[in-house]
Length: 341
Image (cartoon, rainbow, N blue to C red; front, side):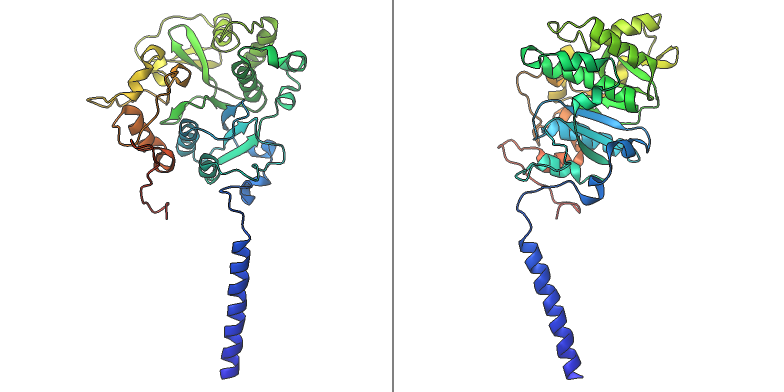
Protein backbone atom coordinates (compact mmCIF):
# COMPACT_ATOMS: atom_id res chain seq x y z
CA UNK A 1 0.00 0.00 0.00
CA UNK A 2 2.81 2.37 0.94
CA UNK A 3 4.65 1.56 -2.28
CA UNK A 4 1.55 2.38 -4.39
CA UNK A 5 1.11 5.67 -2.53
CA UNK A 6 4.74 6.61 -3.13
CA UNK A 7 4.40 5.79 -6.84
CA UNK A 8 1.24 7.90 -7.12
CA UNK A 9 2.89 10.86 -5.45
CA UNK A 10 5.94 10.53 -7.72
CA UNK A 11 3.76 10.62 -10.87
CA UNK A 12 1.87 13.65 -9.58
CA UNK A 13 5.12 15.45 -8.80
CA UNK A 14 6.46 14.64 -12.28
CA UNK A 15 3.39 16.15 -14.00
CA UNK A 16 3.58 19.22 -11.77
CA UNK A 17 7.24 19.79 -12.66
CA UNK A 18 6.45 19.39 -16.34
CA UNK A 19 3.65 21.96 -16.15
CA UNK A 20 5.89 24.48 -14.37
CA UNK A 21 8.60 23.97 -16.98
CA UNK A 22 6.18 24.61 -19.85
CA UNK A 23 4.84 27.69 -18.08
CA UNK A 24 8.31 29.22 -17.79
CA UNK A 25 8.79 28.78 -21.56
CA UNK A 26 5.80 30.98 -22.43
CA UNK A 27 6.79 34.30 -24.03
CA UNK A 28 6.41 37.46 -22.01
CA UNK A 29 4.42 39.41 -24.62
CA UNK A 30 0.73 39.87 -23.98
CA UNK A 31 -0.24 38.35 -27.34
CA UNK A 32 2.06 36.71 -29.81
CA UNK A 33 -0.52 34.82 -31.86
CA UNK A 34 -4.21 34.90 -32.49
CA UNK A 35 -6.08 32.47 -30.22
CA UNK A 36 -5.91 28.93 -31.64
CA UNK A 37 -9.67 28.59 -31.88
CA UNK A 38 -9.75 31.64 -34.18
CA UNK A 39 -6.54 31.42 -36.20
CA UNK A 40 -7.73 28.53 -38.39
CA UNK A 41 -10.93 30.31 -39.41
CA UNK A 42 -10.47 31.90 -42.83
CA UNK A 43 -12.18 35.10 -43.83
CA UNK A 44 -14.38 33.48 -46.48
CA UNK A 45 -15.61 30.76 -44.11
CA UNK A 46 -16.22 33.24 -41.33
CA UNK A 47 -18.28 35.57 -43.49
CA UNK A 48 -20.44 32.65 -44.58
CA UNK A 49 -21.93 32.55 -41.07
CA UNK A 50 -24.01 35.68 -41.60
CA UNK A 51 -23.87 39.44 -41.55
CA UNK A 52 -20.57 40.80 -40.30
CA UNK A 53 -19.70 44.13 -38.70
CA UNK A 54 -16.54 45.52 -40.30
CA UNK A 55 -13.92 48.02 -39.12
CA UNK A 56 -10.81 49.03 -41.09
CA UNK A 57 -7.36 50.31 -40.14
CA UNK A 58 -5.64 51.47 -43.35
CA UNK A 59 -2.49 52.79 -41.68
CA UNK A 60 0.35 50.59 -40.42
CA UNK A 61 -0.68 51.29 -36.84
CA UNK A 62 -0.73 48.19 -34.63
CA UNK A 63 -1.79 49.83 -31.37
CA UNK A 64 -5.53 50.60 -31.47
CA UNK A 65 -6.57 53.61 -29.44
CA UNK A 66 -9.13 53.25 -26.63
CA UNK A 67 -11.73 54.74 -29.01
CA UNK A 68 -11.06 52.04 -31.63
CA UNK A 69 -11.22 49.40 -28.91
CA UNK A 70 -14.52 50.82 -27.65
CA UNK A 71 -16.01 50.87 -31.16
CA UNK A 72 -15.14 47.22 -31.78
CA UNK A 73 -16.08 46.02 -28.29
CA UNK A 74 -19.43 47.83 -28.35
CA UNK A 75 -20.28 46.25 -31.72
CA UNK A 76 -19.39 42.80 -30.38
CA UNK A 77 -21.64 43.47 -27.39
CA UNK A 78 -24.62 44.62 -29.49
CA UNK A 79 -24.20 41.85 -32.11
CA UNK A 80 -23.11 38.80 -30.06
CA UNK A 81 -24.13 36.27 -32.73
CA UNK A 82 -22.38 38.05 -35.60
CA UNK A 83 -18.67 38.18 -36.46
CA UNK A 84 -17.06 41.55 -35.79
CA UNK A 85 -13.99 42.07 -37.97
CA UNK A 86 -11.09 44.46 -37.54
CA UNK A 87 -9.03 44.45 -40.75
CA UNK A 88 -5.58 45.94 -40.22
CA UNK A 89 -3.08 46.85 -42.92
CA UNK A 90 -0.21 46.37 -40.45
CA UNK A 91 -1.16 42.76 -39.75
CA UNK A 92 0.74 40.27 -41.89
CA UNK A 93 -0.79 37.48 -43.91
CA UNK A 94 0.39 34.73 -41.56
CA UNK A 95 -2.47 35.61 -39.19
CA UNK A 96 0.10 36.16 -36.46
CA UNK A 97 0.58 39.32 -34.47
CA UNK A 98 4.18 40.57 -34.32
CA UNK A 99 6.26 38.47 -31.87
CA UNK A 100 7.12 41.59 -29.83
CA UNK A 101 3.52 42.84 -29.64
CA UNK A 102 2.48 44.03 -26.21
CA UNK A 103 -0.68 45.84 -27.28
CA UNK A 104 -3.23 45.80 -24.45
CA UNK A 105 -6.01 46.81 -26.88
CA UNK A 106 -5.31 43.92 -29.26
CA UNK A 107 -5.07 41.57 -26.30
CA UNK A 108 -8.45 42.77 -25.07
CA UNK A 109 -10.14 42.54 -28.48
CA UNK A 110 -8.69 39.18 -29.48
CA UNK A 111 -10.10 37.68 -26.28
CA UNK A 112 -13.69 38.56 -27.25
CA UNK A 113 -15.39 35.50 -28.74
CA UNK A 114 -16.94 37.14 -31.82
CA UNK A 115 -14.11 39.58 -32.62
CA UNK A 116 -11.68 38.56 -35.37
CA UNK A 117 -8.50 40.30 -36.55
CA UNK A 118 -7.53 39.94 -40.21
CA UNK A 119 -4.88 41.46 -42.50
CA UNK A 120 -6.12 44.13 -44.89
CA UNK A 121 -4.74 43.22 -48.33
CA UNK A 122 -6.09 45.93 -50.61
CA UNK A 123 -4.84 44.48 -53.88
CA UNK A 124 -6.59 41.20 -53.20
CA UNK A 125 -9.69 42.98 -51.93
CA UNK A 126 -10.02 45.09 -55.08
CA UNK A 127 -9.74 42.15 -57.47
CA UNK A 128 -12.87 41.65 -59.59
CA UNK A 129 -14.10 45.18 -58.83
CA UNK A 130 -13.86 48.48 -60.76
CA UNK A 131 -11.28 49.62 -58.20
CA UNK A 132 -8.56 47.15 -59.20
CA UNK A 133 -7.16 49.00 -62.24
CA UNK A 134 -7.23 52.29 -60.33
CA UNK A 135 -5.38 50.80 -57.36
CA UNK A 136 -2.66 49.12 -59.43
CA UNK A 137 -1.89 52.37 -61.27
CA UNK A 138 -2.07 54.89 -58.44
CA UNK A 139 1.05 56.33 -56.77
CA UNK A 140 -0.09 56.45 -53.18
CA UNK A 141 2.99 58.39 -52.03
CA UNK A 142 1.76 61.47 -53.90
CA UNK A 143 -1.78 61.29 -52.53
CA UNK A 144 -2.45 63.93 -49.86
CA UNK A 145 -5.43 62.10 -48.33
CA UNK A 146 -4.37 58.53 -49.07
CA UNK A 147 -5.34 57.02 -45.72
CA UNK A 148 -8.88 58.37 -46.13
CA UNK A 149 -9.14 57.56 -49.84
CA UNK A 150 -7.86 54.00 -49.44
CA UNK A 151 -10.30 53.50 -46.57
CA UNK A 152 -13.17 54.86 -48.67
CA UNK A 153 -12.31 52.41 -51.44
CA UNK A 154 -11.78 49.42 -49.14
CA UNK A 155 -15.11 49.74 -47.38
CA UNK A 156 -16.99 49.84 -50.71
CA UNK A 157 -15.21 46.76 -52.03
CA UNK A 158 -15.55 44.75 -48.83
CA UNK A 159 -19.27 45.33 -48.33
CA UNK A 160 -19.94 44.76 -52.03
CA UNK A 161 -18.09 41.43 -51.96
CA UNK A 162 -19.22 40.07 -48.61
CA UNK A 163 -22.11 42.16 -47.37
CA UNK A 164 -22.58 43.33 -43.80
CA UNK A 165 -22.30 46.63 -41.98
CA UNK A 166 -19.30 48.92 -42.23
CA UNK A 167 -18.54 51.27 -39.32
CA UNK A 168 -15.83 53.86 -38.76
CA UNK A 169 -13.60 53.16 -35.78
CA UNK A 170 -15.08 56.10 -33.87
CA UNK A 171 -18.63 54.74 -33.90
CA UNK A 172 -20.00 53.36 -30.62
CA UNK A 173 -22.83 50.85 -31.07
CA UNK A 174 -25.74 51.05 -28.64
CA UNK A 175 -28.49 48.88 -30.20
CA UNK A 176 -28.94 46.66 -33.30
CA UNK A 177 -29.59 48.21 -36.71
CA UNK A 178 -32.85 46.68 -38.01
CA UNK A 179 -31.96 47.13 -41.71
CA UNK A 180 -29.98 45.00 -44.18
CA UNK A 181 -29.58 47.63 -46.91
CA UNK A 182 -29.13 51.22 -45.76
CA UNK A 183 -27.26 54.49 -45.92
CA UNK A 184 -26.99 56.85 -42.96
CA UNK A 185 -27.95 60.50 -43.31
CA UNK A 186 -25.47 62.92 -41.81
CA UNK A 187 -28.00 65.68 -42.39
CA UNK A 188 -31.06 66.12 -44.57
CA UNK A 189 -30.36 65.07 -48.20
CA UNK A 190 -26.70 64.30 -47.45
CA UNK A 191 -25.28 60.82 -46.82
CA UNK A 192 -22.33 59.83 -44.71
CA UNK A 193 -20.10 56.87 -45.51
CA UNK A 194 -19.06 56.32 -41.88
CA UNK A 195 -21.82 53.74 -41.41
CA UNK A 196 -23.64 51.79 -44.10
CA UNK A 197 -24.81 48.26 -44.74
CA UNK A 198 -25.80 46.13 -47.73
CA UNK A 199 -26.27 42.52 -48.70
CA UNK A 200 -23.53 41.14 -50.99
CA UNK A 201 -23.29 42.37 -54.59
CA UNK A 202 -25.74 45.19 -54.22
CA UNK A 203 -25.77 47.24 -57.47
CA UNK A 204 -25.67 50.56 -55.60
CA UNK A 205 -22.17 49.77 -54.30
CA UNK A 206 -20.99 48.61 -57.73
CA UNK A 207 -22.06 51.95 -59.17
CA UNK A 208 -20.31 53.71 -56.30
CA UNK A 209 -17.05 51.96 -57.20
CA UNK A 210 -17.48 52.87 -60.88
CA UNK A 211 -18.13 56.51 -59.96
CA UNK A 212 -15.15 56.43 -57.59
CA UNK A 213 -12.84 55.73 -60.55
CA UNK A 214 -14.60 57.80 -63.22
CA UNK A 215 -14.77 60.95 -61.07
CA UNK A 216 -11.59 60.47 -59.06
CA UNK A 217 -10.34 63.69 -57.49
CA UNK A 218 -7.80 63.14 -54.71
CA UNK A 219 -7.45 66.85 -53.89
CA UNK A 220 -10.89 67.28 -52.34
CA UNK A 221 -11.36 65.69 -48.92
CA UNK A 222 -14.43 63.46 -48.90
CA UNK A 223 -14.90 63.49 -52.67
CA UNK A 224 -14.53 59.69 -52.77
CA UNK A 225 -16.41 59.26 -49.48
CA UNK A 226 -19.58 61.00 -48.27
CA UNK A 227 -19.71 63.18 -51.40
CA UNK A 228 -19.62 60.03 -53.54
CA UNK A 229 -22.39 58.34 -51.57
CA UNK A 230 -24.51 61.49 -51.84
CA UNK A 231 -23.94 61.81 -55.62
CA UNK A 232 -25.16 58.26 -56.20
CA UNK A 233 -27.99 58.60 -53.68
CA UNK A 234 -29.37 61.51 -55.69
CA UNK A 235 -29.32 59.36 -58.82
CA UNK A 236 -31.16 56.49 -57.14
CA UNK A 237 -33.63 58.44 -55.02
CA UNK A 238 -35.95 61.39 -55.04
CA UNK A 239 -34.65 62.98 -51.86
CA UNK A 240 -36.82 65.03 -49.58
CA UNK A 241 -36.45 66.40 -46.08
CA UNK A 242 -37.03 64.05 -43.17
CA UNK A 243 -40.33 64.28 -41.32
CA UNK A 244 -39.81 63.92 -37.57
CA UNK A 245 -37.69 60.84 -36.77
CA UNK A 246 -38.70 58.64 -39.67
CA UNK A 247 -36.49 57.02 -42.29
CA UNK A 248 -36.84 57.32 -46.06
CA UNK A 249 -37.29 54.36 -48.40
CA UNK A 250 -35.38 54.39 -51.67
CA UNK A 251 -36.02 51.48 -54.04
CA UNK A 252 -34.57 48.49 -52.16
CA UNK A 253 -32.66 50.28 -49.41
CA UNK A 254 -33.33 52.79 -46.65
CA UNK A 255 -31.91 56.25 -46.02
CA UNK A 256 -31.79 56.50 -42.23
CA UNK A 257 -32.57 59.65 -40.28
CA UNK A 258 -29.59 61.64 -38.89
CA UNK A 259 -30.73 60.77 -35.36
CA UNK A 260 -29.84 57.12 -36.01
CA UNK A 261 -26.07 57.77 -35.95
CA UNK A 262 -25.52 61.54 -35.79
CA UNK A 263 -27.71 62.93 -32.99
CA UNK A 264 -24.82 65.27 -32.19
CA UNK A 265 -23.67 67.05 -35.36
CA UNK A 266 -20.04 67.52 -36.35
CA UNK A 267 -20.18 71.19 -35.41
CA UNK A 268 -21.10 70.21 -31.85
CA UNK A 269 -18.66 67.29 -31.50
CA UNK A 270 -17.14 68.75 -28.30
CA UNK A 271 -20.45 68.04 -26.53
CA UNK A 272 -19.35 64.41 -26.21
CA UNK A 273 -16.45 65.57 -24.03
CA UNK A 274 -18.56 67.79 -21.79
CA UNK A 275 -20.48 67.16 -18.56
CA UNK A 276 -24.24 67.15 -19.11
CA UNK A 277 -26.80 68.10 -16.47
CA UNK A 278 -29.12 65.42 -17.88
CA UNK A 279 -27.60 62.62 -19.93
CA UNK A 280 -29.38 62.16 -23.29
CA UNK A 281 -31.16 58.86 -23.81
CA UNK A 282 -30.34 58.46 -27.52
CA UNK A 283 -33.52 56.39 -27.79
CA UNK A 284 -33.73 57.03 -31.53
CA UNK A 285 -30.12 56.05 -32.24
CA UNK A 286 -28.50 52.75 -33.23
CA UNK A 287 -24.92 53.99 -32.81
CA UNK A 288 -23.08 57.25 -32.13
CA UNK A 289 -20.42 58.76 -34.38
CA UNK A 290 -17.93 60.66 -32.23
CA UNK A 291 -16.39 62.70 -35.08
CA UNK A 292 -12.82 61.81 -34.19
CA UNK A 293 -11.43 63.52 -37.32
CA UNK A 294 -12.65 66.81 -35.84
CA UNK A 295 -10.73 66.20 -32.62
CA UNK A 296 -7.54 67.97 -33.58
CA UNK A 297 -7.18 69.11 -29.98
CA UNK A 298 -6.56 65.54 -28.89
CA UNK A 299 -9.37 65.43 -26.33
CA UNK A 300 -9.23 62.11 -24.46
CA UNK A 301 -11.72 60.10 -22.47
CA UNK A 302 -10.68 60.35 -18.82
CA UNK A 303 -11.87 58.05 -16.06
CA UNK A 304 -13.78 59.98 -13.42
CA UNK A 305 -14.37 63.04 -15.63
CA UNK A 306 -18.17 62.53 -15.59
CA UNK A 307 -18.33 63.53 -19.25
CA UNK A 308 -20.88 62.12 -21.67
CA UNK A 309 -18.27 60.06 -23.49
CA UNK A 310 -17.00 58.55 -20.22
CA UNK A 311 -20.54 57.39 -19.47
CA UNK A 312 -20.80 55.89 -22.97
CA UNK A 313 -17.57 53.93 -22.47
CA UNK A 314 -18.65 52.64 -19.07
CA UNK A 315 -21.98 51.43 -20.44
CA UNK A 316 -21.18 50.21 -23.96
CA UNK A 317 -17.53 49.08 -23.81
CA UNK A 318 -16.93 48.17 -20.16
CA UNK A 319 -13.76 46.12 -20.82
CA UNK A 320 -12.13 49.03 -22.63
CA UNK A 321 -13.24 51.35 -19.82
CA UNK A 322 -11.78 49.01 -17.20
CA UNK A 323 -8.47 48.20 -18.87
CA UNK A 324 -7.51 51.06 -21.18
CA UNK A 325 -8.83 54.36 -19.83
CA UNK A 326 -6.52 56.61 -17.88
CA UNK A 327 -7.47 58.46 -14.74
CA UNK A 328 -6.87 62.19 -14.22
CA UNK A 329 -3.29 61.49 -13.10
CA UNK A 330 -2.47 59.77 -16.38
CA UNK A 331 -2.34 56.20 -15.13
CA UNK A 332 -4.58 53.28 -16.05
CA UNK A 333 -6.55 52.30 -12.97
CA UNK A 334 -8.13 48.85 -13.06
CA UNK A 335 -11.36 48.10 -11.28
CA UNK A 336 -11.65 44.66 -9.77
CA UNK A 337 -14.31 42.52 -11.36
CA UNK A 338 -14.94 38.81 -11.93
CA UNK A 339 -13.23 39.11 -15.32
CA UNK A 340 -10.15 40.91 -14.02
CA UNK A 341 -8.41 38.62 -11.59
